[in-house]
Image 1 (tube, one colour):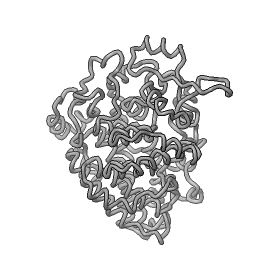
Image 2 (cartoon, one colour):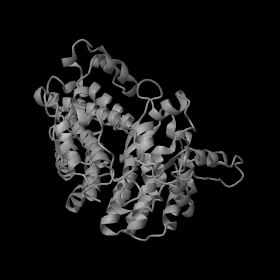
Image 3 (cartoon, helix red, strand yellow):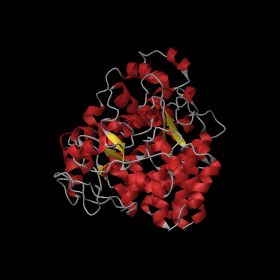
Image 4 (cartoon, rainbow, N blue to C red):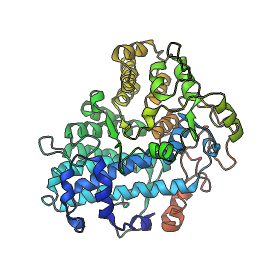
Length: 480
């Protein structure tokens, strides 16, 4: 992993031509590209945000892992991954690419710590450090939820360390909570915000709320309810605070699903919306949200909408047969070139509060705000929320699962943590290589095979801690 990370040829040239479709700070283009030590940190910020979101939401880690493992989508063809076969190239690439961008964020932190005046044109240095730390924490959190123990404390601290240790996942969780509290305290709302920031456009009030909302997510998952309660007053207050990433209509920051499904003409060949999700939503008469998730099979607008999901985990031949009978695909808003994709929304904060206090009011507020996120008007959203049956934790997590559509790793994580919703096993059985343990989905992703060569000693130590060091999919996370 680490050797590949330092192969960064023509880094500044890449940044110059890859960033400007994603930011309004066009005057920075006058910076001399041949002087990398003076490149504004705004470039690094834009580059890191763009590439992290592209890696997490692309056709690979996003589609062929997260959206499948949460059973939001089903595979139409080449269905091995919906039966939990793992392609090593996908894992290697995602692991490497996420660490590359963690280094970019650490570069911002180092520059603004060591030479604050030199890089203050990209925002007040403490605000830049805070935002870079928050995005780093968000990324490390998702990575440890995928792989478990990973390089953390030594991973981006020194470039000469090419073999970082693997930290225990529970220690990473505790460290992330501490870092996020520090980042929140570091924010100076009265000082200039961060330039090159696609997520919030430099709004430091919202970054502070995002940091505290992430603390709530991480604290709930690890059982640190004190952290959850401490962070809650400073977390998201409405949907206006949602952390969203806006892809660009053109350039290097185009939605990766658009690139794969439209430009590369793979639309309809890999995924349909799963029967698991559609059947659950139809059972709650949740058709208004469903219109934003899945295509309507009824072409006549005067007739009731018809949604039909694809059975999860079918063999190739059976999947294709079911597809030709008519199944709902993803709606165009999800794979538009300039689509918006969420990192975390206000509804999740409400569901967390509902869970820790078994609060029915917060549950219904969560459903309502989720529906409004998916283009449902407030009155209809409230009516939907009021119609929901409340059965404590099961209701909360099932509706949190729906609300986290397009955040596949979150849906998968909440299933592993709680066992909700009740996901069916693959219809035609697991792939022979899959070792998924007690639940019907894998408990984790196997480590990248590259690590066995590039960081062999630490990789071996980490793998030996698992119940199944060969397959690596069975061992539960510490929070399960």
